Image (tube, rainbow, N blue to C red; front, side, top):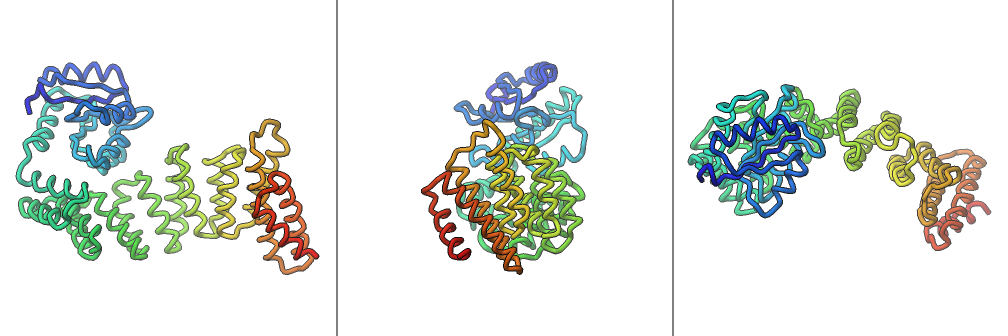
Length: 410
């Protein structure tokens, strides 16, 4: 493909850096250039009708960073092999390692020269658009793997790539992925160890090994293998979560706390699913229940004023029979209902919250040995279930619980 036919996507939020890069590309003979000021805008362009042949992206940007954009591209069935150059002034090794983990083709540190930019672009374009027999075999296997094609044909392609370049780690990794997906984890583990022996800093091989050990419930081996790559790349959120869970499963509370603390600090504040995972890992060890509550107060709902979140996480505490915290969270909702003028809680929702609180009171009362204390708990539950019925007379669960309590209190 001629230079004039290639279409570049340059993603850069700094107007001055954009003014520097565009003339460099034009002097190098690349005329078709599309620009975006952040990863989100770039992602929209990539999903448009016009083709893009190579992406040059900044690392640190608002709305969507370069690493997230790269991850979306590499996990896309259509765009996974799109050439990607990370251009950054961030010299922190951990940041660069994060981009390497998501298969960046090259990274260039600012400030850079036109010659350096041209050399890297030429190398990557040749690799992708004038591939060697090695890259043809590797790409052919990956295409089959990505699109769910013939696994045996994919394996043969990776075998051929490994024969052409026996000291390259990539073929062994993708060969292992294919075997693992085909139900051969033991053979996959052997190939992953081979991959790591060829390239000690190959994060994906460690992660897949960890996943296999996790499925096999060998949490000690999982923790050991993930700790090895974590020393090289400690700032991967997903790996910290996997390590935290493995640490809990082997009784390493200090290790679990360390990785959960990192995850809590670095997770997107709007990413409720990740915080729920963090919360659930804390709840696996009863000695860390208080830390789960701290995580909620510090990162999820600082003012403890969101009824839906209070209810959701109260039920997680209920699942591990921590009735005191369950009741505490649900009573916060009752306080909002009673004291906040424009609380905005629908009657139907409040019926659910009162019902959940009543159930928690019943479950707590069942744990009491003293008959009078148990009876008092049931009486409190009865008052609450009546509140639920007041809010929604059609709540069937509340009606059943009300009848059950009447029988116990006769």
